[in-house]
Length: 243
Image (tube, rainbow, N blue to C red):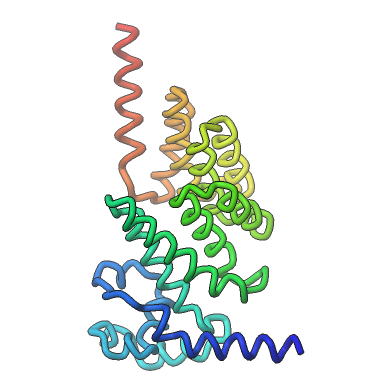
């Protein structure tokens, strides 16, 4: 009975492909920003086969994605990635909420059928946490992020998403501690966690600790200059106080 239910659920995924997932026009930047497996999966769908992006993916790669059981139906989560980035950039709060809700719906569709241990489970948990944060449903955000950290304790994005939620709630010490916990769990190898720790220490006025983590973040290849700029301003302000 359980196996029949799973097979029925995946048949629904196939039926839902054109109805629920890609109900938007994908931009070149959004396609380029997807992980490779999303690009490959996209061009196997009805809408993807009619897009200009189909020429960028080899037939062999697309076929491997289409037949990979680990990716069965995951075009919904690929769509969710697009909705989340659009929501975070959208200035209109009503439109942003709509996009966050789309993120939740599309991610939840795959998340509910994905067992612990799947390589996308942690990513989806972090995405749900960020989307619920976007609509200010912090209890739900915390629920998914705590579960994500429990299931996959070396997944950096779950810790940074939890940091953002705790910071929104004014729990700044706890926010910093969750980053420290994540940095320890990943053995200091996550550029993202070092970057956010640098930001947390800048906000706390601790320039020395912020500089340590900023140096690590950029040494590990973190691309955004925001931490460097904030830290430079903090250090300049501290120097001005002593002059």
